[in-house]
Amino acid sequence: MKVHSLILTVAFLFLVPPQARSAENDSRADQAQARQDAVIVRAIERISDYDYRSDPAVAEAVMRQIRRSQGTPEFMRLVKRFKPDGIETQLVKTLVGDDRSAAVESAALLLELDAGRKAIRRRLNSTGQAVAVIETLGLLGNGRANHFLAEIVSDAERPYDQRRAAVTGLAKSNDGEKRLVALATEKKLVGDTFLVAGALLARSKDGGIRDAAAKVLPQPALKDAKPLPPIDELAQLRGDVAAGLKLFRGEATCANCHIVNDYGKDVGPNLSEIGTKLSREAMLTAVLAPSAGISHNYENFSVLTEEGQVITGLKISQTDNEIVIRTADAIDRTIPGEEVVTIKKSDTSIMPENLHHITGQQGLVDIVEYMMTLKKKG
Image (cartoon, rainbow, N blue to C red; front, side, top):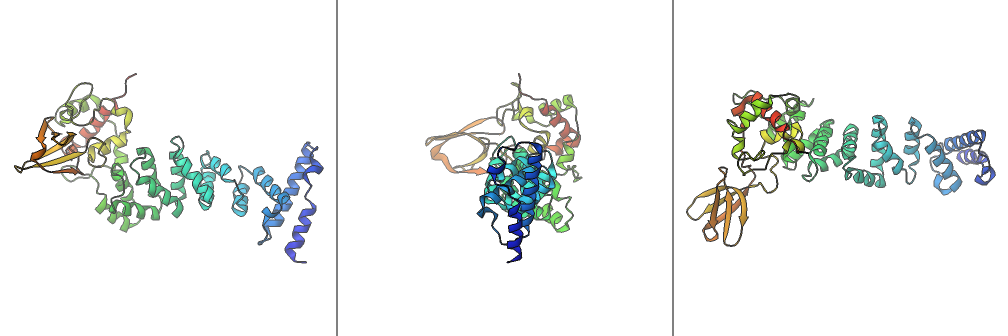
């Protein structure tokens, strides 16, 4: 008799048929069942070519042992060895649990299973748990995890906090860093994460990554070419609200294009509730890189007329007869259709670049501090 057959035969001797103990509910019976299951599992672990699913009684013993070990290192080991059908339900619970080590192990196992990858995708589409799952994938940092993260950072429809978490996750591994550089080079990285991606890659241990990132994700500098702190460090600074309000309405000219509580001009988005909508980091990004995340309906258009005049601004309306463009001075220009030579949408925001050259670093922080106070009322 082959050795593995002998081992399995001995193990089966310990297997109590379900009907033989259906009436035993005391703790000693439970302990006996646990010992029997452990013997069976240890036996079939030593057999490389045995399909434990072929015998329902053995399969049940394996599943009991796996469920019994939930929350212990043994659980992960058994799942890796047996890959039982339907285990992704339990793994997903661990994926979003408080034990980060177990969560990473669960993510690794889920990514090996077709059903597991589908389960992860479902969790990523659940707004309440997406960020936690993204953070776990970043901690795992293998090729499959980075594939998911790269999809997320390229998806402009995803909320900023999810894309930000995915950028951070990719920056944790060399493979992920390379993917970030490639996405930025191919112009697939969503613009409002440019600054955080560049800041994280500038700290890479890989000199080649740092050099490549500096070319495709340059960091903003002050007027004297002195670099600003990285965006995540800037977000930790606090400013003066009154000074920010003064700059917003005055020297920084923000009110020339934005309305806040009925004050200002209606060119760009109304900012009366912007502090409710954006995080401090996202707010800084919007000011430092206005072309990176242009809001829908606020794209910049250039119209060339027959006279050779170029009129640039927001497209308010367009018909066969005319097009209306609102300029940065809040002037609506109506251009007859027969006078239009070309209409072109620009990748550049109507908002001026390098506002921080006017305000300086502290002024920038003050303006953002003021805008963070602009909350939804009630």
